Image 1: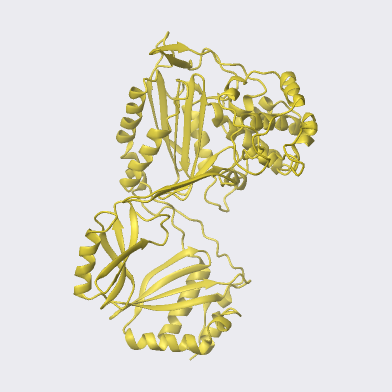
Image 2: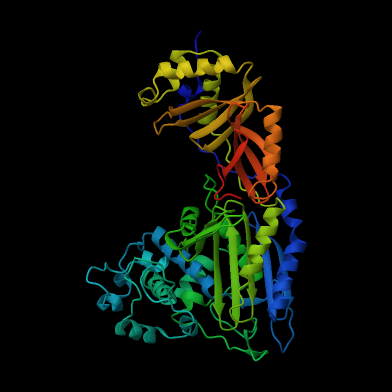
Length: 563
């Protein structure tokens, strides 16, 4: 019989597919959580005794909800709403990072430039060790310059003039750690980045930010100059509120001076969400999507924590460019940043793979609403409203699956030769692969595709064959050749669990260390005395393996932590 496989006919291998959301009710589920998220922020506003607070939700590049609480000014009693402008403090750092990346993309500077190229005053800086390399732009972006953490000192420096800042630099900057060896948050470093923006662009930092970032993004009201028309910042002392005058824009404005309203901050979060996923769609600017994605990658680790008990919790945190980036047991990537100044507190957070973001601003010293934001995302997740994009099957994976199904139905050495990469037979002799398939066909009969090919990426996937006696799982990985062919291949049998084993599985799953779990699909085992099941628990999936009436539990594929 002649075998023909589609993948050998691919002239231009367009195997790239864009991940997409597949739950048609996803937005309705998210909007159904609004009353609960409102309650969380109202509780935070009340318990912290904040004069005024506003928060919002962004879904798929659209601001879908904004809610205000309280007042922006204790004298006028003006209510907080979508147009109330707040100073967002260190959230400004991400705007500065965008300015640097736009200049980089235009060929005006390199992230690996020595800082002294743009700030000559720093050339005479005394480094802490003789083997310290010169400070770079990238180190400033990721808080890796070795400068000392400078909160709250930096919060009081917004208005210093350029001449005074130059004098400080001339006097020298003390180091707390050697450059590029660790993470330490530095407002001073971002003030230097503001000066680099000015030198590389030939404009003031404020002019460049307005012309190249804010206005092209549609942020028409955002400004670096606060006024009495904006929310007034307050502190609390001895139980009483007092007004804290806002500082004017100066050399430290690049680290924390921006004033913005909820509509425009929501548009800004939507802009960051629009960078995902990578795709062929035309750029909308003002900064390339690839550069915005680059900002949202963890370039410097800051901390790792884990705690046990009935539920493992872990968090790996770090910094991108002007943004904090972390990973925990529930979400593979959380992008966020807070802002705190005397008189103000703010926070923004988004989940790039889920297309959902939130933001909040308050006019009380360091009252950044991170806690209710995390609670809100947890509420959304538990309600099933947060689902990541799914990766469609690439044409090359699909054609390879069809070839493997054809081989299962009627084996042919020549057929396998057509799809095998040059390493396959060195790792698994062809005769061994053929013998393994023949042995499985003796045990599993009447097999047909289960209809689902599960892609791990564009060049790796697995699918199943439903059989009378259970199923056969086929996993394969394609090689990085012009026409990707099979470099790794595995056929494995999964026996149908006996009634006794199913009963035991239900009993053990109900008593799992992760709380009461439900039994899902069987993923391996012969099915009479042993089997491994997926189990669905309150906080995610796990694996439960049964052997000789004993159960062991482990992390499921795709899960960062056990439930």
